[in-house]
Amino acid sequence: MTTAARREMRAMTLEDVLRDIHALNRELEAFEEKYGLLSKDFYELYVRGKLRDEEIEEIDEYGQWAAVYRMKQHRESLYDELIREELQAALSSSEETLALPATVK
Image (cartoon, rainbow, N blue to C red; front, side):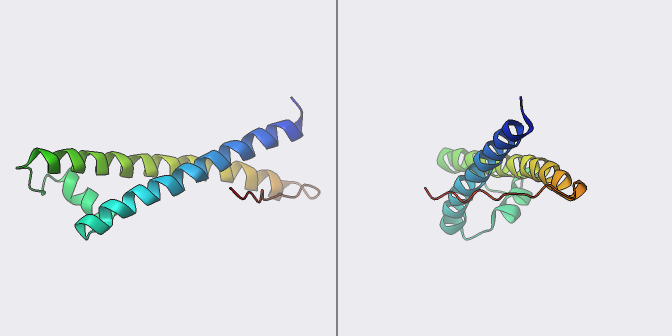
């Protein structure tokens, strides 16, 4: 596989990760608007067991909210790894430049 092909594959992966992060943000925003609480604050209450758990619908939604929040954290970690590789490659080479893919969907 050529260097250009590897870069293209990484860029596509980075693009997919970014798309996932944006989709997860939209899901989190819906929960935040419904409950009037930022996801980071909700998650802290959730993991400490400080949320009411009397109704099955709330329990289900809290579980979904927590899962989406954890997925977003994972995707952001993956993004950090992928972008770090791209940046290190661009910064370590005096000739290599980083092309930012401008995609409109």
